[in-house]
Length: 139
Image (spheres, one colour):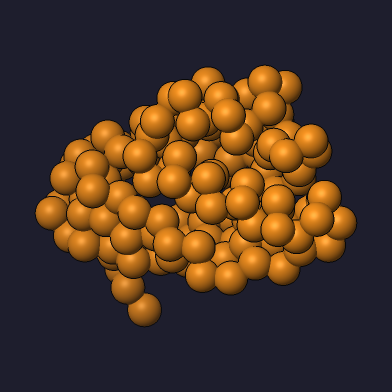
């Protein structure tokens, strides 16, 4: 996949995660995509699986925004570093809303084919989130 189309896919993906737009999800994510999220013991599948994760995040952080800070592309694999920001206004992993603002990093690998995302392995800074919402002591 040429880097221009890879960049386009990633830009559309960021638009999707920041809006939760279902049509955009189906445009950018393959129906048989597999996502490995630390929040779920089993892989999630397709646009609906990703929408489930987005829904979970939006219920805890209604104003959540992801900023794509940098990417490194090799063939059809994209390593991406994001900053996630939001306000803890809903329950998150059993922790009631604190009203605290968060800002954490995530490192994700995306696998692309035919102009769509077919897989992801994500590593968000959940320790940082838990510290910033007051669930764990900060260092």
